[in-house]
Each structure stands twice: as C-alpha cells, then as structure tokens.
Image 1 (cartoon, helix red, strand yellow):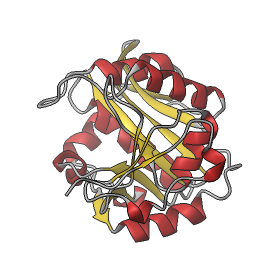
Image 2: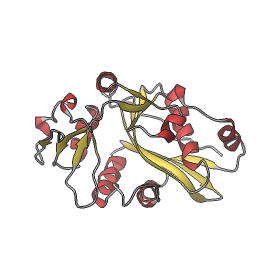
Image 3: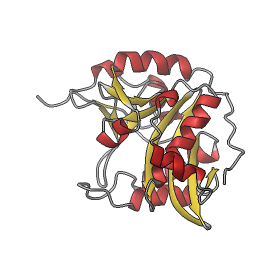
Length: 234
C-alpha cells in the first residue's frame, strides 16, 4: 500500500503541516513546499524533517518509531574515552559551518549512492545557521578538519542532521561533545530520525512517535533559549 502523502503548497506554511500521526508506514508525510526558515521551524517543532534526493521534490518525514539519543545515555567506549583524553584533537563549535556541511554531503557512505544534502538543503541550513538555529561541532587534528556534525537546535531539542569522519572515531568524538553539552544544558533529547546499528551502538534507541511528539512539542516551545557554544576543547 503506498504511503499517504499531502501536497504542502509553497508559502502556505501558516496553514500547518498534516498531523504527523497520519504519515505513511515508511514515515512519509507530505510532498512539496519550500525550505524557508519559517517552514523548517514549523516542521521541526512538530517532529517533521525534510529528506529528499537530487531531482526530487521536497519530501517531509515523521517516522514511527523515532530514533533518539538521550544525552545521559550516550555510550562512550573505553577506546573513545582514551582518544578524547589524548589531547591530540581539538573540538570546537560553530567555527566552520560551510566546511562541515559540505564534508557531510560529499563523505562516502557504504551502500549509499549520491547525497540528500543537495544544494537547496545546504542553502537552507546555512540560513538557519545565520539565524542562530543551526549549529555544529568540529573535530580538528593539527589544524585539519577530521570530523564533525551539524544539527538544528529549537528550545531544548537538538535535531541531528548529519556527521562525517576522516579519522577513526571522528564523528563519535563530535557526538560525545554534543552529549556533554546536552547534559550541561539539560536538553530533552537529540533526534536521530531513523534507526541505524551505528547509532544504537552509541546509546540511541527507538521510541514511539507519540512519545517523541509529546516531548518535542513541549521542549521546543521556548525557542529563545541560548545554548552556550563559546568554548573549545583541546
């Protein structure tokens, strides 16, 4: 049975998205619309995110179950802990957004052809970054970018989008830093969207969409919260 979907007209975000609970079995909720900041904020605040490939219309998703990571549940292996203590890597925040998002877009991934981080998505998240809503964690080795991730922050919820590694555990170090920040600032959760074995090995787990939505709709209401991305670690 094909997934039920709705056409979201461009510039009509004020009408709202369909109820996420009406998404199809694969999580597809709506087709069309735009990637303007107000559209993305409306979507994320209701547990909806864009995901589409080149030459496709904008596709909006809200899968059930939802993969999430509660910051205090992050699994830091002994090897990763040793790597973080070595002092070999510097971890920073919001220093090189364009470089990180392009690295995420071009980083080869097993079993995946092409990228969903298409030019229109890059422009959209660059705009969110300019507005202070999209952030990133960078991992550096001797001045070279070797890992990182980017995400959207609304209220007390981080919506993780993508990460990459150029050295072993590069993205894990970035995620460990993000979880430390999440514990410090009492984030409700980090949204990981879909299940992967890699994320599960780091402590992420699936929860019912209804539970996820109940958390997100409360935790994103106060979208004026300023998260402190002012420090760097070496």
